[in-house]
Length: 181
Image 1 (cartoon, rainbow, N blue to C red):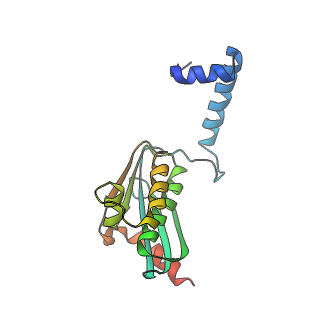
Image 2 (spheres, rainbow, N blue to C red):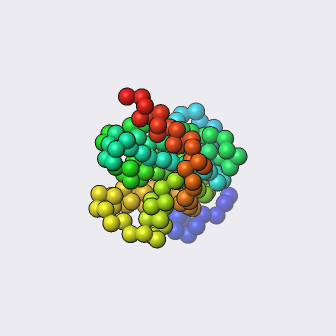
Image 3 (cartoon, rainbow, N blue to C red):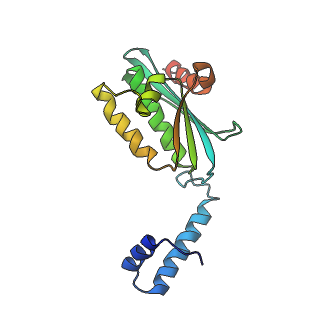
């Protein structure tokens, strides 16, 4: 059997003082995890792993104005794994950009990527998240904190600025959501 890190062994020993109980728990947990790899239940992570690409966009008609978000999650070959679009009410462009990223990160969690590259056409958001720019607008701070919390659940997250033309799928989802009044 695989050796567990000492920290986990100690934690398991606290909960299961008997070795047989510990082994049974570990075996059942592994079995459930392996079964979930092929689950069709949408609440169970799909465990694709590897590198995934997340394209997000947010926009508003007026600033603030009617706003929407769009997210596209794809594998390295460009195959779309999942898309999401929704109207979010009256918001600014920047709030929409952040909310789109939050929705996209939540989508990506279901696929357990080893690396997630987040592509956005908002240079401001990318530079704020990378620490190059300060977040001066206080209403954006809770969104930034939520993004930072979400990113802790991934082994590696990269924020990358792309031209709007390279973010056309997410942009089209935003426009589609805004057009469907």
